[in-house]
Image 1 (cartoon, rainbow, N blue to C red):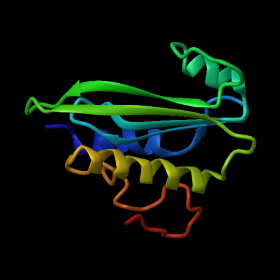
Image 2: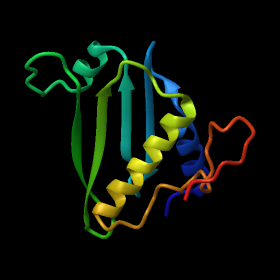
Image 3: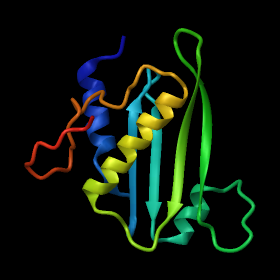
Image 4: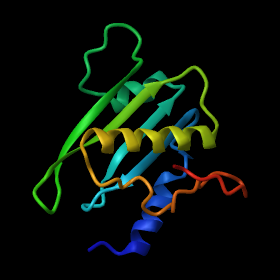
Amino acid sequence: MTNPSAVGALLLGAALTLPACAGTRVASVGPLPNDEPLVTLVVSEDRHVVRSECPDILWLGVPAGCHIPRRLEAPDGRQIVAVKIVRYTDSLPSAMAFEIEAHELCHAVAALQNLPDPCHTGNAGFLQTSHGAQLRFR
């Protein structure tokens, strides 16, 4: 069994939308039993970041984004597909909007696989970037 406080600390550090570099936001949401995230979202104004995050994609023109699935095995033997979504943008979303996007993508990926939903693990269903307001996820 995973240590709940360790998972909370991991998620808090990962779910907060920290800039990876200028013009880029990265979030990891939905810790799985092997401590990997169900969803990693990278949004960047820098095409070089998009190109480097999607190295195995044959680009014809300007890179707009990609998704990178990773097949994982749960402790019960079930196959889970974790996903990294990378996309280019002309303007970064706010930290709060980005966190909501990552969180809702987590719900979609979990629901499509009929997984027990890991998207509220470590955040108790509350935004981490709400600047004092107790905004709640559903």
